[in-house]
Image (cartoon, rainbow, N blue to C red; front, side, top):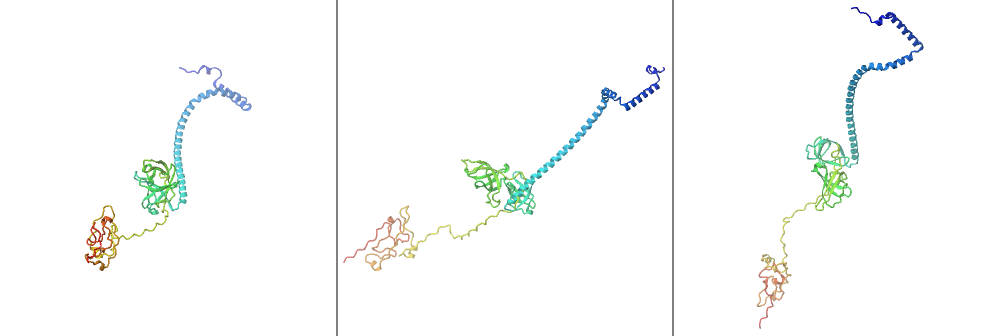
Length: 399
């Protein structure tokens, strides 16, 4: 089977002649356009007509390029997002550190300012950690005996009192906060000077003024400061603000709750007062009096011997006669008169007077019924019996 070209190519001149003719036309058009610029309008019209066809022909290429750009852009955006997040975290950390340093600087400035106004020497300390006992309110500081810290020193901050040093180690020390249940501090109200004692309330983080009268002049918002009576805390340091007052007429004492002003759980820098405030000297102790023997016992009262009574006889005489009527104090008799001369006393019919007895014709002592008691020093022979008649004057003998 023989192959023959299509009829289109068999008509007219040969292919070489046609190629030559078209080449000459093209060269002529190029020369005319370059010299006269007459084909610019033709090119614009042809470009406008062929533009939709050109865009349709470029659609597959643009689609392939678009898919590649989408995936490459997605991966690059994910990388940028991760990098920005990392930078944001790093920037937030730097910002937090800057804020923390700013807060510490402000706290240190306040501490230095408060340190200048303190009447005693102080030392800056930092809180390391809280105590291991969860039931207590204690913190550990980075100062110890090597830096001069001793037991009992008060600890404050720029706002007020924080606590007291209760244990000391070579390089650290333990501070018991005011809110601990075993901590107490003498205080007074700044408004009226009312004195009291503030006790900690443990985990509640508050203070309580105990043993206050129900009608005490205490109001919500009053500032409580140290009174300085204990010789540990300087007077005038802020302690707390009164937040609750309970006055019950039925109870013996009122309830007063205060919130501490110091940064007990807010700050990490504190001031340790290195010396106690100067107190006036105590008065000298009184001299102890020598105790006497039997000082707590009542010694018998010795009566002076009566005039005209023999001391020996009085010392050997028995006790007093029966007492008078009950309920009356014994009355001592009046002193006995001097004895009469012996010549007048020695008369016939009469007995000689015994020593210490009244002579004849002289008044005798009052009887027990009249006086209530007999003299204690008289003997039975010398003293008349109770209820006996008084002595009478002897009669003269008949001549």
